[in-house]
Image (tube, rainbow, N blue to C red; front, side):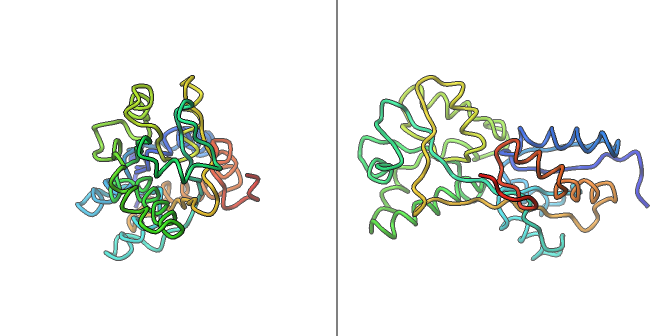
Length: 253
């Protein structure tokens, strides 16, 4: 039997750091339940759950990590609750735009920053982009993988999840020419930095991240209610307000 004293526990990808508080507040307005959120790179959060942590709901920036919980018997099949899009934040003095992005990614004078693959889905999506570039420019993957600096997502504590301060410093200092990440996070970052801009990635090589939600087997009734709230029209509208592509509403992006 659920205890009304126990708060709902949510483990969530760092890229949800800005949107999730709005979802939590809206849910508490109608349900009144307390919610405790732990943000981090989704791969590291999944590892915590495998090691014994038991949140009610796991919100991952990909579907692979929730599926791993299914494989080991900790959760039923996940659902996709939002989508994002990969973009590049670039130094304005680098002469990078959508039309020449692939050429500039491969140019020797351009340094690339990413999140850490396996630990952080953002890094995995960057590597997927590298493979797409390789498909039209054979040999490009090795060049891009070698150039990529994994500046965030390596641990839960080295840089606050969803916080791009390290990237901002690298762009300002010129140690990184561009960073590949989620459009939802790069827009607010670009608004704070005068010398950078967000560049749309050409559609032939771009990646559409899918966010997967796993409800753990021993999830509380209140936790299940919050999971359903995320998929409701209200929850999906709030995600859209923060730049995510909703899955339960018409996509207006």
